[in-house]
Length: 120
Image (cartoon, rainbow, N blue to C red; front, side, top):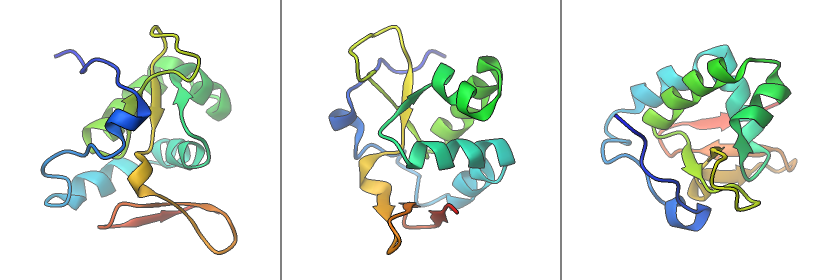
């Protein structure tokens, strides 16, 4: 099954799966894997990253990064967004804006309502 067409950040900012809050265990299982946690940490600090950029930051292959990003997308943790440079060939991922926060120290926090991800 193919992914939905790319959308802009503004279009997907409030898009979450219909059963997102009904099944928080899906989200928790997705972010519990160490490499996925590291991906979430990286994506919490920036508007979006491509698969290649994320792989370089984590020292992982793009194939592995793509596999883990799919799990995070399926869990509703991330969305696919248009590349900031307008290049439609690049697949960028982002934490939906409605879930982004910062703590009192200015560190990024992702607040999904059913759980809050805090990064050191």
